[in-house]
Length: 256
Image (tube, rainbow, N blue to C red; front, side, top):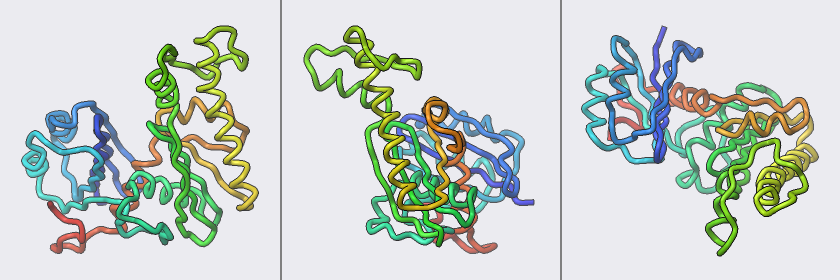
């Protein structure tokens, strides 16, 4: 059975996952994108057949050499314009974040035959829709949970920065608790309202949340909304499988 390594390289963090067939068998995460040492430690003693890399940050500090030391598997660079199991109606695929496409693909595979809304609660909140025909339409991007709190602090003269949680009271009785309420309940209200609008337009809509704040907000929404912490990695793996090079041939997004 094929063993695949998926790397999701962000601006400050690298996520790695090993897949055997369609099953994730191991994963790791580290905060230093310039040092490939943690990758070599993670891969010590392992043999893989293929690497799929999604990159929004920069790969520096000997990554090319580190990838060669892992072995010589085929390699696919994954982007928002990569060939995909879903048909894309996005007008500017070259500007599409690969994480958004990956979330849409993974959501559609979790709920085949149903319209699917994948919501990623990270630095920004992204909403990505696939319809019943398997067409990816794009979606919405809004400020994320911590970005909202930071913006109210950085773009005013006197408001402090807060770190709110899901137990923030609806009515703030001082400035800190008022900011905490606005940050948490404001995003929660946005999620509920937008999910309701999508559901009005798409019957039997399946909704799946991912990202660092997914579990936090899934608890504050109605039943039937699922949290999947590794949705993006599964979607990236699906993209890498779809764009898998034939034996002995380079991928359409081979080594750069």
